[in-house]
Image (cartoon, rainbow, N blue to C red):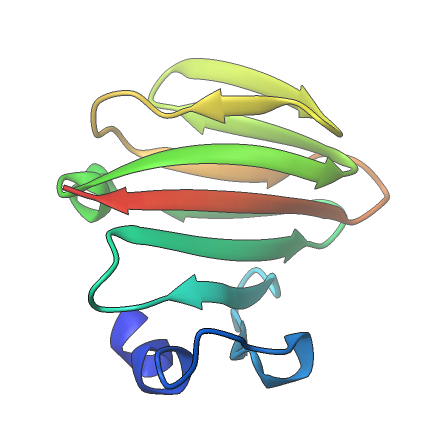
Length: 121
């Protein structure tokens, strides 16, 4: 999926919000905005809006070459990191540990917005 956003995101150091690539997951209906991605930079920033009462899961294999920090912008997020449960509110952040299956879950009636900062190893 990263390759989908790569071409559009590295042509300029400035990228307006209206020009940032956006993708909606067909299953969980979450909205993913590629805030920053550049092939010469190990940092990637992704903003996600997870609708009310939805979840999105990812296997541990998706994380073996990256490090991640999740920061909640608004709403509440439950992040299942293997069997460990993190309950996050606006302003809270969590650094993900060693690769494990991850589930991002919104258990509320309101959307949740969060930023994922990714560093490639």
